[in-house]
View (tube, rainbow, N blue to C red):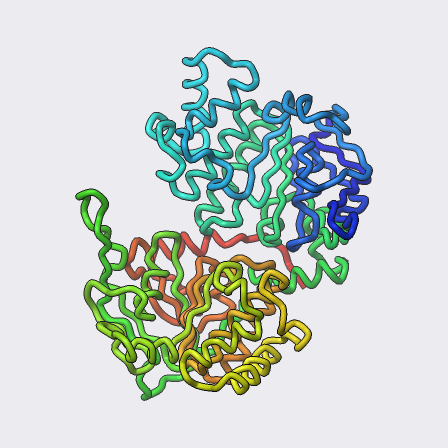
Length: 534
């Protein structure tokens, strides 16, 4: 009996300009115990297809045609009330964002128990025992403590495990995982994916992965369906879809996925007598504890140096202290002790004009281009603004220089008057990079600058950063948890865990000859598809 059988599915969204086709005639088939990955970039229709297939039609969407069978039962056209009888029991959904999916006002144990209560279990003792068993099954061993915890008291990986516990509570025959690991660190991602694999083997559930991460799909799925513009581009076993005979679009995705490419390191930086562009020595940062609790040691005796014109990556999991180091380097956070020198300036104690001068010579590109751009300014005004703010150009000259920078990052003149909301994520990140370059900095700090982008856009931005570095002699401090990206772009690396340096060295040395157990764990967590891609 097939876990999921979707045929000729078509979905459109109602807009002011009429219907916009989002999914156009796709088929999805998942057998018991099989993992199928629905892969595509933002806007490909993958999430719309998956949710519509299980009856959860997104807001504003209209199902135009197609049939869906779950566990041999045709559920096409079922009402939401009728669907409630099988959601949770026959279909388990693991959504992308545990923060948005969990009620912040209820303990997580109560939220898992709700799945059991909805489907008829009224005995409180039975519910409590089953919740404890589920939490243990997803690796949260102190079940009683976790059951009492509220979502904000758990890490991102722990919250994702809670969602998995709710999804498997009634042992459904189909589990839909919608970008369920995209926001997680590599080690947490591996643990969550291992857990889903275990459930597949133990319960025989069919798994539908919805993901833009081709490396994860290649490592974990039996079959892959590649979508673009709502249409299937390629479909079949992993080794076939990602092999030589794949279509042009799929081949482009493969070529742009760092984890699927042969490992090629940058040449080792040439030793120079010039002082480093960034020098961090004995850096310590403590944050006050809450309500009388001990201080939190976020950065603990961190030291490294970055040669001019090179890229130094700081890698580590969430909470490792990497973003705190970056903020201290830019004078946005005060160090507790230690010394930081950036572009020849000692950062500690800078105020007023001196701090302003540092911010001209050392710029920051944030992770999210959605949040970092002023929504009320055109992109031309956005890039011109730092030129006027630092007194580098008058209004007309600033606009002319901004236009030239936007052209340099491949944003054509017809886009210059648009607001950020009118651009794609990749275009917005190009605006953020152009803005950072406007005051002609020596150092650019890039805090997870491509983690929110699809692989094709990510590759374009990384190539752009390489070109700009060579053209302007820039020094990059690159903050990331994505080791495949770090391997691609950095000359040297510092690995942090719990605020302490685990090791530092050239990228080739750290990746090929890791000195610490922690680094080896991080490297082992990079998806390993085991394919020969050519």
